[in-house]
Image (cartoon, rainbow, N blue to C red):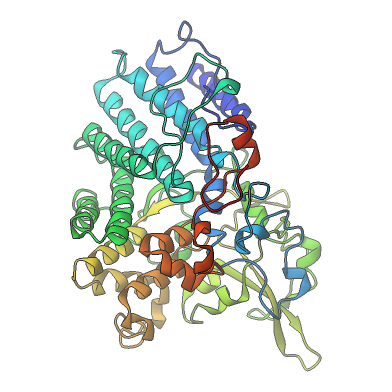
Length: 506
């Protein structure tokens, strides 16, 4: 009971802190050192609270990683019902019309809230002796690894950002005046934190909390992402080698990781063998509330048909959302009909014509269908951050950069996707037309595999700016928009911040 009370106390503080409109570097809890950091239970609760806050940040992570990447918004021919019920500014992301008053994601995603908690955790763990040695090392591995993850999100989105690695507990946030650090310094800190995380985890490759806690494998996955970014953008085979080694280290030391035979099971079976790290959800505890932006309300969907099952949608299809982010019809058509991911990820809706034929009206995401409880749909799916399919396709990317053969890793993913329909001579690499360009092949496979997992925009940016211009509505004449604008409130509350270059200054 004692640990439960502490968890509620810290978790509640996180929720209060998330409402701040400022660049929040102040501690989210008012618990003083005099009453806290006295027992192992308190430390355990604090680490749990950090993961609760991380889960709350999933929405911002998804928006930053996907909504500008060309998969969402209306297409020509889309029914008016599927152009967005009440887009509320989301359209500025896929239309590339962001500015300081329509920033898409404000307050740097709220990420500094948890960065400060991680700074506190790291600082306190270095001074206390009552936590078991193996737990202290594991928690330090979490602290450094998750902090690097947050800063990589910030680096890829805003470039120059405030770099803060010491806990702040003695001043009011309104007095904060700190300039952003150069992006190069942020990347240096990211790589330093990754090294520290790996050193603290040591030989401990275990998973905790049903893969709901950060782990050494998560740090290795992050390491691969970071070093592929620098390898792609700076032409370094050395970094590509580091990325490949990080991924093979996971395979060597955690042989239980594997692809599930059925794609959809990845999102319905908790803590399965494919998951490396996920934010976990549970009925009556937490849900993926932001999924409501990607699905329609019942009154909208009941006017349309499911052509595959030859049925009209009705009240039992209670998606219970408000379709602010419609899925493009082109996203649905990017899949082969034989690809199981098409039917799991996206729900098409059709008009039924007088001759009995169907014409597509629009689409929405159905990847996280959740569960029904008392006639209400609850989005209780876990949100995957890293999984084994990600490992395989990152490894394929590293292999391409190193002049190696990516066939095995790409085809493991394709074979699972097509199931009984898989024909190596047709669907297998290098036999699809897109395979003539191996980088494009990997990008497409990642698009089809990871829709609504917050990866596409970052994948394009990692490969190089030209891929963003090729695959999204952003043109090279507006290259400054590769980074996000800083919102007005953030600039108001920290006068030492400068607007992202290219956007109108505040």
